[in-house]
Length: 318
Image (cartoon, rainbow, N blue to C red; front, side, top):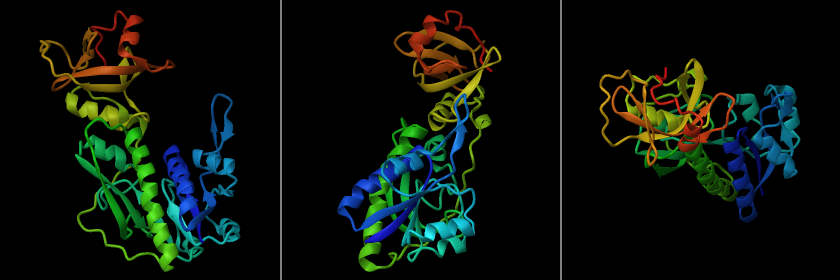
């Protein structure tokens, strides 16, 4: 039985772990431990909260390791569970050679892109922002350089232009677990990692997304802003300023109707169309907003929002 250490932290990685645990019932591997980021202070009272992956593992009686650093003490602790292979998705750390020496078969990593396209930590928002028609789910070997491993398997994902950062990442997390399970079964059967293919093509890289990346520029086109709204949902979200206060745009589409607004500045709230949404002028076209959220308030469907914001039409958003 192949002994697996799973490394990951956020909700998407929890989806992968949950699916791997389910698949393990019919496969020749077992999850013997979980490596995750340390608990972080959350909420009004700043209580230390484990990551979604760590919490799920504890609920399922899987040993959990949450070191600040992958140092000698960490390596010693993990060596006690005698893992054969490392499986990683969204852990956020580079594994050094000393750490990787713990694993008889090295490690494999799930990466939601057409590697070498979109290496780095945010390939899913990148695919949505660029309005790609396809992306991929890739299982690669873990290398000493970021996302430069050999490709073990890859599955194409068709995009229809309605995906959000959350929905696409969660889909890749779930479908990716199936691909990982197949690779793990191969390792268990052959007692070696399958031969991989080198990455071919010009690499591109993604970066850490900050709150400022979500700031809407109303001089951009409606098409670009709509993609931005989807890519950055739910975090950091696409946002703007309404009378100097933050306003999140959580759902929108490009308005296909016509509206005379050449004399209005970009960012003007033009109208409220009950059957469509809230119309906002952009640098090219009109954005039709479906859901929005004021600071400290819940996200609201456009009709409910307008019930309490009768003076919203005519506002110039910044």
